Image (cartoon, rainbow, N blue to C red; front, side, top):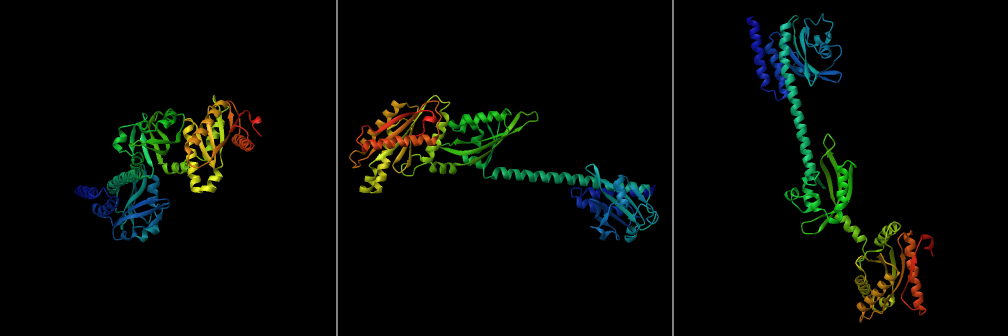
Length: 471
């Protein structure tokens, strides 16, 4: 009885030594194999073998015969350790020379005659074994089997702790990476509540909007969206919130604190609760001001600042497409300066450029607010006049001719304007190329009439169905 008490005391002391390093699994391994020899005086070696695929690897060892075995790999099959792992039950070998379950040659190589092997559980399965061995046969009994099981318990705890620590470290690393991605991203990233309130914003979004995080948290996306873009944004936001779409993307403007605006590309998706109701929205915001500026420049005439031919074709395409369903018509006037070549030849191109700028200003001052003037080439212009009939066009062209004459009076520029126009009534179906060609031909007819001494400076024709539009 006294011997058993001493062994219990040695086991308890071993537990204390192992628990002292329980936060480091490698130290736990070393403490277990070292204290196994203290707790079991007849033992000559102890090893911890961990499963690695179809092999077991010696991860910790103590004792003269086992000290150099760390890193050794053995097949799981055909060994007592393999049987312990397969069955999940402790194994006792009293003599390796007669026990058919063991690898006799392997035991002879490390001077093992008897051994105790117990499984090491972790995360619901056995991942390794603790093996205590002796050079003597019949060195262990059922009590020793119990002792080894007690010694293996801290290993399972250590593995669990290590797993939790490793999981915490991974989660911390993931959290750090997310924070770095969120805060240091080259685009704006925001979380938005179903109400439109900002829940979280990153540094780039603050830069884009010109506001601090605190200022943004006190408002909604509706508050800083340009009024002209708000309806389209809210419509798509509501469709996403209702589950009608999975995401949406649009280009829109944010209002800056100084009253200016910034163009952005917005992509929004929803994060939902388990019941499908919206939790919050994730939006990625890209500043596209430079691209928009470049697009604007590409659509502008460098000399006069007027929109150019490309801009005119895009606008006219949209306008013509809407005519069949529209309630208003559209007039397209083609303008060409008369005697402009003489200004260039007599006074030079710098004065010619000045003349073009002044003529453009005169025309812009004479047309209505919703009319648009385009410089499409040299001294040629196109004027789009929405909602005009023939009489309206005649009145506008007369007015711009007078405005040009007044603006250039006394400048020595004997220029005028020949203008041809076509009027497309509501319901018209036409091709843009046909519309431009027809207006150009009308302007050309005006020039011919002027050379022949004909009266008037423009002609206007009603431009109906496409079949009657070709000339």
